[in-house]
Image 1 (tube, one colour):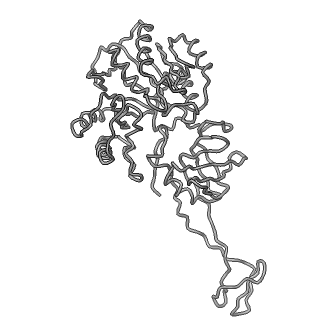
Image 2 (tube, rainbow, N blue to C red; image 1 turned 30 degrees about the vertical axis):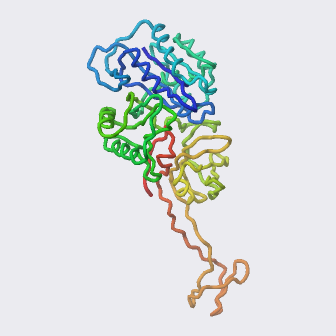
Image 3 (cartoon, rainbow, N blue to C red; image 1 turned 180 degrees about the horizontal axis):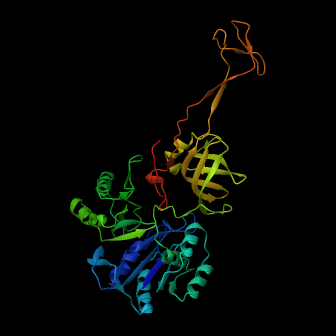
Length: 427
């Protein structure tokens, strides 16, 4: 049995991942593999904070179990062999009761949706949702055509994300160990946050724990949610002892934890094969720079590029931090690969790959080949030596040494989106 849900949190509180933890604890069922945390199109204007949907395959285990979570003192187990449950409506009613109890329904953007299914839909639903804009009517039609059991509240927009989470193929994936302190964590001093982030650094495969550049412990989210911290990793086994070490090593208490398989840091939102840009979609493509970057008030940079016979604008906004200082050295004629979202007619850049740098020259007066003196202007494209009668119509050109390396430049951890994969190479 597959349970998927989305859109239960709001801008001022709540968390869909915590709600899934609550459901698993109350139902007392085992998980096949890992619960799935699936980030969707980051550009959707009506999204709640992280735009993440959840999906889990549950049942009764017949094989060896691994503890992957805990809530209210009750363990949550993962197993590779899980027997299905036949009473889908009963599970749907029990899970939905928890959703209505915990969802942030007062927020106008919160529109919960939940699906109970026997099989995963075609993967196209996932890729369409993570890369484009999907309408609720289209999602509902697909859900009904496949005979799925579902529940929704308000306009039910969460069904879009629930269907996408069900269809995520997990071809590329990372993991996240999330610790919770319900209803919200107590304030932790910056020094304590850094110590816990440094502990996370000691676990094999973890990434994006601490942003040294901005002195920011990135594992700690907004205190408006019940999430205490979330540690991302490529090693789901190695991270299982993290909650125990936090509890024993620091004056921090939490009410539960759960390990998720995620599509974070996979670049799944980028389209690389497309005919034209569509608003609110994300792309990765090669282009030629056609203007020098310019900065406006607020520290936002803009440049132009040429792609498929047309010129477009691109922007690098202030949250990109140091990436702005690197790409300001881009020159006209540079051949680059841009990664970003197309919004309101321009690409909002998330990463830049320098494929080939153009050669840049400074024009100057030539030196006299007779006496070595610097020649003076003698009219347009004419130069004369003041020390001897030598004349020339050819200026001198000196190539500028480019500081920009042929690397990929990206935002630091503090300014990076959930789906963006890090490929940093220092210049």
